[in-house]
Length: 394
Ligand SMILES: Cc1cc2nc3c(=O)[nH]c(=O)nc-3n(C[C@H](O)[C@H](O)[C@H](O)COP(=O)(O)OP(=O)(O)OC[C@H]3O[C@@H](n4cnc5c(N)ncnc54)[C@H](O)[C@@H]3O)c2cc1C
Image (cartoon, rainbow, N blue to C red; front, side):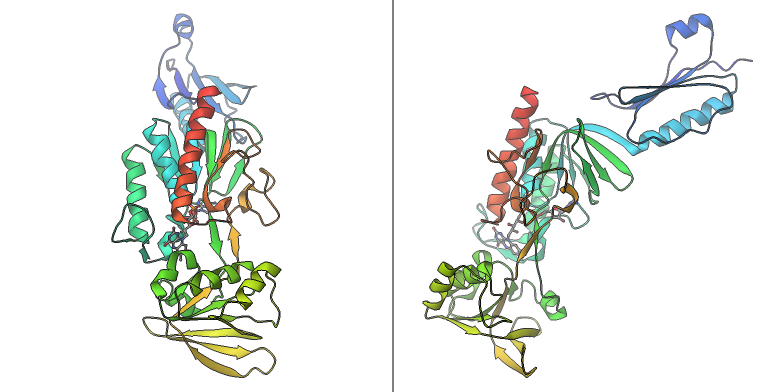
């Protein structure tokens, strides 16, 4: 007996992939059984079915398989395998947003609300830098302030409400060399007509256990964000570059005294910033010293320092420690695909556009100057609007 079935696995751009049993009119006429599969070629995976008539056609970026068989089990197996392969090739999205801080989630709110098919590759550490803090007092709309994790949870739910899909895994690779763009997440490949990079940046930390334990309890990496909490208090800043000097100057507007702890006897900071800190009566320096431990059980109470030359240790009482030893943009996976500057920040032209048409950037992955939740969210909004315009014109 002849097994009569046509099977089609369809995954063309814009079409919803579905597995369906259907008879091709031509085949029906010839009464010839056939399994027909079409799926996009992302990476070639050999099929181990050579028993019967197998025709493999490659054209454009699609593989078409045409199998005529009288063997019911064989047809079933082919279908299963093709389905398994398809599982690696995900749907085509209008936009793929990589990163899930204020920039990524704001972009997702805008694109999904504009009915663009959106997926956020949120990462395993989703929510971004605000997940590391407690009170956020300068994000507009929350007159009493809001906890960082609560703010990010709200943003996530807001984007989800408009239909944005999320995957809580890290993007491991991207391919911007042809369209649609590809974003790999482990074994899955997502395709997007456009991409928004919103992977943010990470502060460099000293790597002390006590520093981790007291984050948000007096340990900070952002004076613009947290200086106001330390009015008339004693604070320390760790570092000797531009960032540390800017943090010290921002803190001196609030704190009673600011002590800058630096492991060398000279600063790396620019001349102009050095001049400003040396002229500020509230700012003092502790040279040639490193932080060994941040003291305090539930809140910062001081630091234990060690002299670099003599190894002598001593303690210093303070209410806060601002770590200002640098930032690292999270842009490793984009290297070679997109223009970055020497420090690894993605170069944006004309607000959110990158050098690859259809790929946009928002937030701290590009912005080393403002580094604020509200500016990242604003940039996310701009990137989403730029995506909308780009797709309309494409
Ligand atoms: C401790 C602390 C306190 C702060 N307090 C304030 C404050 O009070 N007010 C304020 O305005 N700003 C504050 N900031 C700054 C603010 O958090 C940042 O400017 C803002 O979060 C930047 O947003 P972003 O979306 O660009 O990136 P981020 O918040 O850095 O988010 C990027 C996200 O992308 C993810 N990601 C990275 N790589 C990948 C990948 N390959 N695949 C998938 N996902 C990836 C990351 O894990 C992260 O979740 C603070 C920052 C810190 C560290």
